[in-house]
Amino acid sequence: MLRQFGLPQAVLAKKRAELTGFTTPAVLAALDSEAVAHAVARSLAWAEQPGHSIVTLADETYPRPLLEISDPPALLYAHGRIELLARSALAIVGSRNATQQGEANAEALARALSEAGLTIVSGLALGIDAAAHRGGLAGAGSTIAVLGTGIDVAYPSRNAALAAEIAERGLLISEFALGTAPAAQNFPRRNRLISGLARGCLVVEAALASGSLITARAAAEQGREVFAIPGSIHSPLSKGCHALIKSGAKLVESAEDVLTELSGFRPSGYASTQQTVVNADTGLLAHMGHDPVDVDSLCSRAGMSAEQVSSELLRLELDGRVAALPGGLYQRLEKGQRR
Image (cartoon, rainbow, N blue to C red; front, side):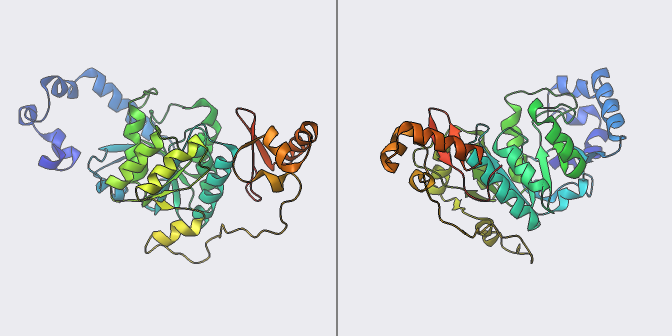
């Protein structure tokens, strides 16, 4: 209908008989139903509140990158800084069950890229998404959260405080009607908007069967750059990233790797994520490496008893240098990436 008649106002101005070839009689009848009239009134009342907007294809503020995708939403509900829709953006996505190191990497990279002026786009999920939003809020570029629910629905509830902060200093958006509850089919659909809003998509920790890979595939189909952070060959959360790299995604170790690939985007004064090592790791850290490791292996490498290793691991964990993982494994955290 939009291709045939133009903007939504033109579609709605047509007689219902002129629209019969485009949809079912039930859908056309719904346009004039009391339920739709109530939903429209509710949306208009919501939009009158401070910081709330409804952006349609007819508006100048509609994000231009979404006009490039095959199925742009007819409208977006927005809460927060609407001007962020006009900024250059990068999507950062990854596992909901991320490791502490993965979250630290996502937050550090998001902050550096936000300080470079890129707006960080993600999906407000637990794990990598939440870390990316925190990093985005810490920089000048801020962050956009694309929801898979109605914009008035707090989901997941554990991120309610983060969502409120994004509404205050960043932007929440959703294509779903007010009151739309979480539904499995809505999240893959919203992923095309996460990638569509951005110039590229960076994946941080993802299993092979991951929604993050759906976002990465959408990015590739939309002509966006795809980036991935490599990890341990033993970690299930690295498998998805390694698969992307094998299929042509850019390997990322620092924010500079991303900025170099985004042609025309190289503002002066951006923050570097290259870290200077002041002191070499000593003691148990020198024997840990970067892969997850168990206590028995550490005892063998370091020549220490299980009691000594456990005591040292506890100290390092309290100091934020080591994270305990499921299965009795431990992994060291890099300096400057502690949370």
